[in-house]
Image 1 (tube, rainbow, N blue to C red):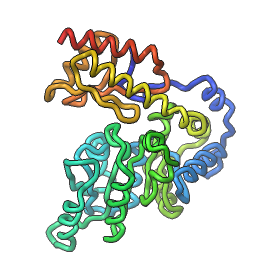
Image 2: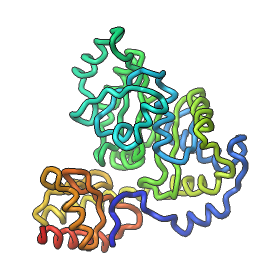
Image 3: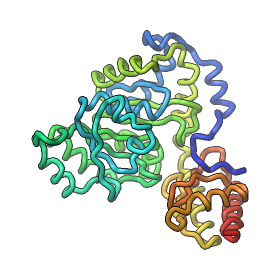
Length: 334
């Protein structure tokens, strides 16, 4: 089975395992784990931030970013398909007790929408806006930096904060051929993942101003995620950050080739940007197609009107050819 469900399925490489086994460790709750501190400092530096906080998951990084930016009952503006809304078990309402206000078109809210939403500010009947949320990449698509800066500029002109869910920010930076700090620029908080794209076994980070990250560190402990000798896992993330970012272009190239082969051979439309391929299906038919792909040796993820195939560091050129063949066989069967 060629597993293309996600780039989170990768296993640590032998050099990464050695780095983890040999990691220098200490008690991170007391700020004494040197490997965690090194990872946090290096992450902050790459993102152009004052500080960063290592956390177990992207879910936690996002929720901490929300928690430090809104008060109970305030609004966060996001896309209806952002991870914050559909994939974090209602934590927005449970932890930060924020109210999402959602748009459905585009990769960022339009100026017209932003102006119409801010116009209601101060109305005693509605929640007060506090935070604007973006993702990059967004379902594999790279959000143009001009769009990000347009939205963060609006937010700051109106006294709102801005958060970037950058779980695959490293992919966006690689696709745009810019330093990660350029993708993170303009945001008050940024979350990044060390497993998606980079291949580390566990961990994400939240970056921002030092005072903001200190508040997030306290909230992390409150949520029970104060870690002790966490350098063992942080070493895997640090290795990935140093050694796997430059190879991301290989994943992007293989994803583009897979999309081309599927479109040319299978009677299906596939598009790729960065390392993610979306194979379009009739409305609501993604599940049936994903099951057929699996019967022919290709594991993908049903996302409703498409099957998602994610290329990662364990996938070779031979795997791409075999995956395209499997999808073609499945398409002929459907």
